[in-house]
Every structure is written in structure tokens, then in C-alpha cells.
View (cartoon, rainbow, N blue to C red):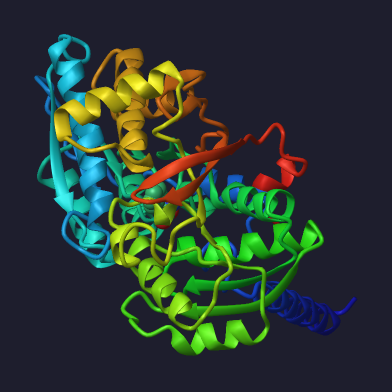
Length: 430
Ligand code: PHE
């Protein structure tokens, strides 16, 4: 081949590659399975995770005590997420300090507020690392915030454990990033299965939050699972978190008369959506994911027994589960904070304890050694289940379906990855 032919051939290949990349990206109706970062097949996830490097050294951590950073929304739109996370971490820290600390050293926590703003998340994570010289970071709750803070932890080689961010892309950012919860392909599978098999629902409309990686991912993963189960998706519509009027989307949805509406958003918008749906005469069950899990959900939906009564969402644990580790935790938390702990409190408690165990195992306050110890977490007995960190940096765990009854979230069923017929596809999405 002459060099001219070579060049033409190369250009042709480049064009074909670009075209196919475009088609696969626009294939997802909810804007990118992993929250804007393209497809999420397992090998691509691992390649991305393992390619990220530590680029800069972080200031040396304090050696006399263990300083941990926590970043969460403490005052913004999702502030109950931050409050529960702070309480869960606080409980774990107080307990471990009472018992003599970790490696004989006391644990100190620095809490920072993200206000659910990605730029603020980046700023506070940088501050925790550069000024507070934290040994490790716990946070964030919302996937979009963890996607903002995660790259900074990775870049500095500071281990980060998200208690509760479920979008797959969170841990793909690098091998210093972990989570102690399941991911959204599984969580949406759980709700699809529950609707299809338990409620015998055939036709579902979806209304998701366009600005949240979490919500976009769930909308997309749910469609895939529900269609595979033979279900029909009547509409896929979106909103923004600052919206307060959802009547136009709900009117469109109502016209096709679906059997249920899947609303994978956060509690504040979900409460309003539920109220307006009922005002418009929509009576079918509403369903969602862990973003519903807030003591403010019912209040936002008009109070107990009103718009969201009887609706269902997937979550990480059920406070009414009689398992001894759960009841012990619920009791301790109630004594300390006067409230029933939701999934977030339990996950934050677990994240902190997984971190303490890893520091203990590492035997020194060295971030790389602690990273390795977190990665090697096996069969850790958490409140939210047994935690084993897999090669993706995630925990394979079961999920529960809860029903809103009055002011309570009541256990309905538990679905485990092992019993899931598409267990593999729970991780492998495309
Ligand atoms: N999973 C949600 C996310 O990734 C956060 C969340 C977890 C909210 C648990 C409530 C309870 O954005």
C-alpha cells in the first residue's frame, strides 16, 4: 500500500469509529448509562478504574491521631442525606474512641458541607486534603457529588469511601475510590422485578431528574431491566431539581394510563410530584430508589396517609428487620439521636467501620497501605449486610423494597444478587 492509501484507510477507520461511538451514546434515552461517561460494560469499567493514577502527593497526615474527612450536603436541597451521614459516622467514631481508638489512636472527624453543589464538593474535598491533611475521606451521598470529589481524592492518593453513591461511574474514577453499597443497575433491576412479579405491573412511565447522574442512570437501567422482563415503558420524561410544577409531564403520562410510575429522584421533588400526580387524578402506585429514603419524604408529599401512601422504593436496609445487628444499631442510634436511622445512617456507620478495620489492618497511617486494605475487605459484618469489596471497588449486596405506610417505611421483600436471574447483568449493563 502506498502512503496515500494508508492515509485514506486510516481516515475511513476513524470515521467509522466516530460514527459508531455516536450511535451507541445516543442509544441510551436517559443520557449515558454511567452518568455521561458512555457505556458501562465491566471491562471498560475496570480499565478506567485501573488507568487512573495518583498524580500529586498529599500533605502528610497527622500521626498522633486519625483525622478523617467527611463531605456531605448538610444545608442544601438534600440536607437530610448529610444529617444522617454525619450521625452514622459520629456514632461509629464515638464507639471506636470509647473502645480505645484505632491502632491505639483517637479518631477525629472534619465535616464539610457540599450544599449539593459540585463545585463546592470539589472545593471542600481539596480543603480536607490540603488543609486538614486527612488520612481518608468518607462521602459523598449523591453520585453527582462523588463524581466531583472523587477525582480529587484519586489525584492525591487519598482513599475515599462513598457510603451511598450508587451510580456505577463513581468507583470507575480510580482505584482509591470505593463504596460500601450496591450500584444502580442492580437497584433498578430490583424495582423492575418487584413491579413485574409482585405487583404484576405491565406498563410503566418514567419521570427522572435530568441533572442527577444517579437519576439518569436509574431511568436508563430500569428501562432495560423492565423491558427484558416483558414490560412496556409508556413514557420517559424528565424534570430539574428546582422545578416545582410537574403537571405538564404528569398530564402526558396520564394520557397513556400506565400501571405505575417510576420516579428515580431525590425526596424533595418526589414529594411534590406525588402530590401533583394525585391532584391530577393519577391513582397508580409510584415507585423509586434510595433517593426517596428521607424522614422528609412523607412530609413533602402532604403528610402521612396522603399522596405517597402505599408507594414503594428500593433501599439498603429496613429498620424493622429483626436481624440482631440491625436492631442493635437502631437502638443505639435512637438513644443517641432520638430518630429512627434510615439507610444512609446505616451505610455511613458501615463505611466508617470498614475504614477503621482497614486502618487497623494496614497497621500504619499510610494512605496507600490503607487503600490496599480497603480493597481487600472480605465478609465485613455491616449493619446493611456482609460487605466484600469487589474488583470494581463496589460491594455486592442485597436490596430491600420498602413501602411507605404512614410515617414509616415498612419492609416488603429482600432481593439478593444471587437470586436475581440476571445477576450478571446487574453489573454488566450494556
Ligand atoms: N444512591 C443515591 C445516589 O447515588 C444517594 C442516596 C443513597 C440517597 C441512599 C438516599 C439514600 O445519588
